[in-house]
Amino acid sequence: MKKMLLIVPLLLLCSSVFAQSQKGNLQKGDYGYLYCHMNDRGRAWTAYALSRDGFHYHDLLQGDSVFSDAEVARIEGATRDAYICRKHDGSGYLMVCTDMNVGAKERLGKVETWDNYGIDLLTSDDLINWQSVTFDYRKGKEIFSDPQSESVYQNWATINRVWAPQIVWDADFVWPDGKKGGYMVYYSMWNRGEEAYDRMYYSYADEHFTTLTQPRLLFDWGYATIDADINWVPADHMWHMMIKKEGGKPGLFTATAPTLTGPWSEPVEDDYVDFEGNKKCEGVSAFQLAGDSTWVIGYIEYSSKPKNYRLCLADQNMRNFHSPRNIEGVDRPQHGSFLRLTKEEYDRLQKWSDEQSGISQ
Image (tube, rainbow, N blue to C red):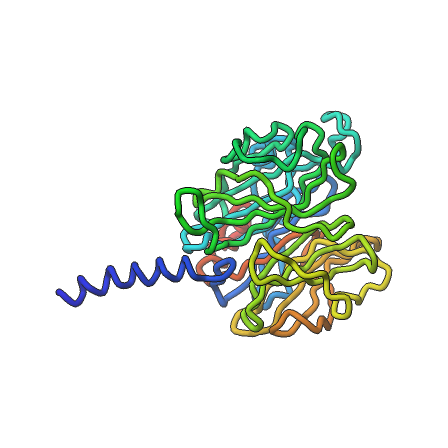
């Protein structure tokens, strides 16, 4: 009995140490994959598709929205660019979306069709039921958890883009009270009244994923950059960021850094996703195959009609991109992200979809 009493706190301690020391988002599951994405049928919404191998998928809910956009996205009533991951301690799931409806220009009085004003942070215990908090950046520094800090903008009311947010767990982040660990939420932002182009910024969310710190500039290479995707690559012990860059040679490129907040290197010019020639690509999302060192890189090639959602491969160092192919089995795939699943999670989602769609078991 004394040995058992010693083992229990030791296991809890080990779990706590792992949660604090892990690099990046928690990876778990070797049964299947969830593709959580923007469905590209008319007004965009967030949809799910399942796969056993990471390449061949089938839609859940027949491609319809997995939640009420009107309830989740309180600014424009539509969600785009969904990014999904596990909570760092494995206790649930997180999602973040661009709050944006490209068909709402007249209703919202936008200057441009592709303007938007904020993002949505979501939490779930089961991947099915989601709670959300909406951040309307036009309201200024008072929406953030540190309103007393210096702001990156003088006038938040003129912000016109808050795009493609993503999440990465940062075990090394230290809060003002000394507590370690936070979720870095990074995204591109453009304030037409104060800067010339889109730049990458980051904020930190708390354990509850309901608050954000004021944005800080992640980097500025002198031209517009959007759609960053950051992953810890164990093979070279570096953070890798794939990003769509608009300056110089266009395409999907990689920068690296020893720490999440940088300094980030210039994009590597001789090893990038170059399969598409002059076609336009964005929305990068990378994941590793279960039990394999291979990386899969997803992205949308959006200049063709119809568009092509592509999956290519990279080695353990997330280098040497090769073997591009279209994703299979998804109706109108677009910008999204991938989550490895356990069998229990896979079966739960499939059963939920079948029940909602009226499919008999």
